[in-house]
Length: 569
Ligand code: FYN
Ligand code: ADP
Ligand code: MG
Image 1 (cartoon, helix red, strand yellow):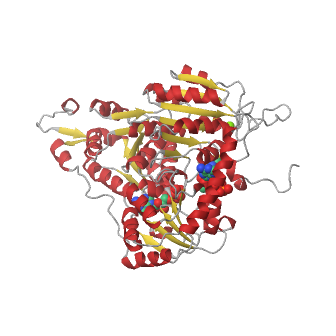
Image 2: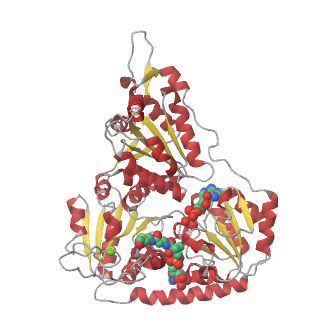
Image 3: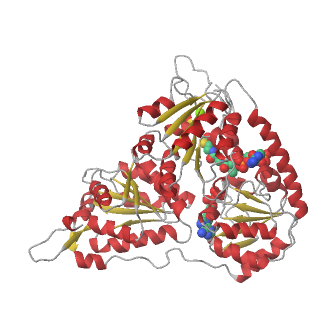
């Protein structure tokens, strides 16, 4: 980019902050940036594209940030999001915090106001002390003050995001730095690529033997796969551990498909039984947080011992005592276990009992999926979707909502690793369109997003981002006209706080934004619309009309929905 580099009288070729930042990112293999441009980062977008890279320009930074975090999860390289200062930064920060919570590697780069004005609170354009605001919400918050530090800062951000437990990093760049110049030759020398930014971490042999003994002595062992295991990209090793030991496994939501949901050892359809009855549970990249009832209580039934594989040492004992912690990277730990467990007797009887329960549950569900109703419910609509998606195992499924999420997780099988992106550790709504963009961009394959009508609303305008980039994304909106349900009565002279305008037509919304739009009122219409959309590869919204009375308050986590103890006054 010779044009952008100024020549000065002395004849020293100069570079500036913009160029050094872009070169540092390129040198480290970053080709896609997700973001939203404006003062002071606008130039980055144009120049990044002119250099032959991709800049995906969003309508709200939160969604660009979700896209970057999902790119990080899918590729094991930090996803990069660029925003303007103050409000843009704050929007992006939500996604950075979500990335950190989910252990997704991501770097948020925001332009900021000048230090001398911010620090004296003199009132700059979009003034905000971004560096300190970001700090508690990510793994590290760095500011670059000198052009010669851009290279080291980018490397530090990458290593921090990727090493140990992955997560988010904030990189603060005061506006003036972007145009500050230095010698191009010196600048070039300041850039580098980190050696081994996510090093293997081997478990101690004594820790391995402890875990091996515990597993060998189990009568009813269980392997629980989390999204950390999916992220680790050692899919074949995990499958081998499962098959060599004959231990049943059950996946957490985003680990579905890491080993196929249709694998004979998959215990997902006997979930409550295996959590309760197992005696030794091997957690692989899954935390005993709220999603697992903190490892205790009636979900977990009688006494049991845990083996926990995690890279983060202080995750151990965070909720219940862990009998055999295995600290290290998942690939090394899984292979160490495989070596120690070679020739182990397979728990055939236990596996048989689970298979029997799973067959029964699946048969029960099958009846629900095929029941004809005047208006679609969650089961017959999702059943229709499931039957189509069976033929497209390599699409990425994005899923958000309450009932939509819980029922789709139960009904729709995943066959391949990292093909399901959902609301994650926080159970956050609004990840839909950002995740869909990233999944389409990073995998180069089609995406189907199944969203509740409420959940879709959080990122709906990014549907224009999808049509603008002509991404092969089908959005199925499970339209029941409200949050949880769409049939709540209006209080006198008011509109209920739980419902939406029943005249909303999401298929028309799609057409208005340059996509295809189809309304589906029956499972047959839904099947036809989804098949056509996957065939066409065009951005499409299918407005799936669901019975307003079909939903359940808070889906399957109604127990978390606090209600007044004294009732209505
Ligand atoms: C699973 N199941 C099946 C199958 N797979 N039945 C038949 N066939 C198949 N293939 C059964 C399984 O045995 C369970 O029944 C039930 O379906 C649900 O399975 P799931 O989803 O694995 O288990 P559960 O208990 O719902 O999981 C707990 C959870 C999960 C907390 C991990 O609910 C979750 O990830 N929730 C996120 C919720 C969220 O973020 N919501 C946002 C809400 S927003 P049983 O064995 O009978 O239990 C604001 O409201
Ligand atoms: P889920 O929600 O699917 O249960 P979590 O996000 O709770 O999964 O847990 C993921 C866990 O995986 C985190 O504790 C994280 O430290 C761990 N983890 C992520 N990547 C690796 C890795 N490569 N090796 C070991 N542990 C990892
Ligand atoms: Mg709804």
